[in-house]
Length: 561
Ligand code: ATP
Ligand code: MG
Ligand code: MG
Image (cartoon, protein in one colour):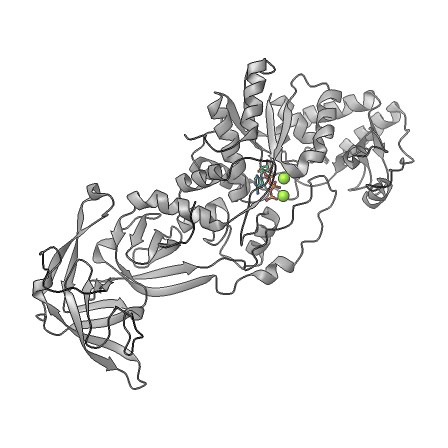
């Protein structure tokens, strides 16, 4: 694996090992199973697994499942599949919810030390009492409850004697701290809800800010890598590890999130696209999810190379999605067989070619990789070409087919346009051409030159196929705003605004034809269609009599690395 791109975290780990501060490395990828993974998560996955790999350490996959209302085992399943597909094997597989008992005991320890108290204020009151950046917070009237009273109330919370939101447990830290995260954060809340893993065992759940450092410490994680919106929570993270008397002391390190042009990168928003039926599920090929990228045809190799190229730094820039396209072209160039497909068919009749005759022509599978050999394609009197490769009245420098002009058919012959057949409305329905047997591809013919080379398929054996072309799902180039931290009691209303940017033309489905040797293609097989681009066999909608090809990327790009 390559580890060349800039990465400040690697330097921290290196120093920790050299100075003897650490004698081993354990990282973790800690998704909340409340949605499918997106390419931003791929960045976190690659960073964590690559670093552990480089320093002979371990990486855990840990489901951060402390919020029963939003989590589901469907997501657990999908996340595992995506991590594996990206090419990574985790060392430990853990669920934060398996630590609920230990977390509860650590909370009791805090109460016993006078470092946590049960508060009866409502979530709104707690927020108001917490103050602002310029204004210190105010003590809750319940802040000075005795240890005994707190122990009893917390126990009664656990037993289910109170309703949702009636009471919370707060860490007792410093209501006048300049860091609002230290103004007595809520560490436990009441939620009478069934949990995907622990069922109805619990009706109190730890808050992310309390749970996460404990999860890391329990697993002996050495370097807990997260994104920069958690930077302000680092003092709280350290406070919890210390005051809960954890033997292991993980270090939180933050890096800048990955954002990509024309994409939302938040499970919450992606879920909204799914729930409102604007896409065909989480794995819609237009989605920036790992499963969407897979279905579209992006490869794990390309995604890893892309993510590594973006580097690891404190700043979160927005990366052009064309950079990912660059890497998938690089990856597929040598691997993908070349073939010809007609997206918008126009019938061509070769009037001087014998009726009923079919000849087989040799065609290389991949000119950039001769080891891939040759394929056979039929040629006969009736062919399809692209509608856009013919113009009755062309502008200058149009080198394709027009009346009187001669072009080359890839792997076959020169043909010359002799006649145009139209329907009653004047639409071109058929082109009549003649071919010159002397010009057969591979025959060494040099008698004359033509400027255009067209792709085509033989009409009688052509296999019908559907081609799906994509444009960005969202038309705004701006990245989304940063997500709020996970500590808030209630989720804010999802803003509708980003849905206003949904591109109504993001999917175009065309009915065309492919070469007869494509009849048996496998799900997820990738091809380069001559002059069009790279396509993937859609794994969901392809059947034996309906081939569906998803456009991964077109061939050309102005993007340069
Ligand atoms: P989302 O906002 O999409 O729900 P999240 O951060 O809430 O993302 P988690 O399931 O908590 O989702 O993420 C698991 C890990 O992936 C976290 O360590 C998180 O920091 C990281 N991660 C999420 N999004 C990105 C991103 N865009 N770039 C880099 N890392 C990310
Ligand atoms: Mg999260
Ligand atoms: Mg989130």
